[in-house]
Amino acid sequence: MKKQVKEWLYHAHVDLLSAEKLLEEENLTQSSAFHCHQVIEKSLKAIIESLDLRIPHTHDLIKLSALVKENNIDLILDEDIIAQINDVYIDSRYPSDHGLIPEGKPSVEFVTKIYEYSLLLYKEVKDLLH
Image (cartoon, rainbow, N blue to C red):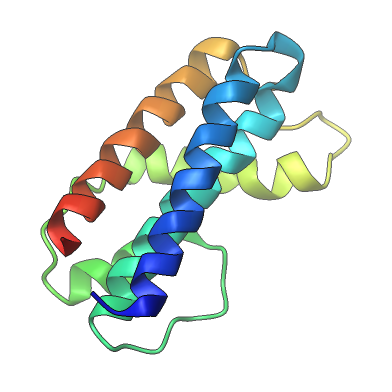
């Protein structure tokens, strides 16, 4: 495995641990959601790197997952969850007038759902690349 692919996976794993720890505190759901986004982003970038493709300078999970799909990589890419996590990313970093997402701060239930998806995708990518 290429060094850079290992680096992407290592940093995705660190974000996964951070998301899990932050999820233990109800007041930190927006931070946990941010790290879930990072897990998915870095996992997808590990795949892109493994294909020797140029990694786009973007945090947009929809664009990254489309690039993975275009290259016929068979992953569990749930477009609905990816779109929801994609929306949370910007809002968790830069709060809007409406709160962190249109419905307000992400709920523990919502972040648990995206954490579980992030974990699933990370494990799938890691297995695929090893």
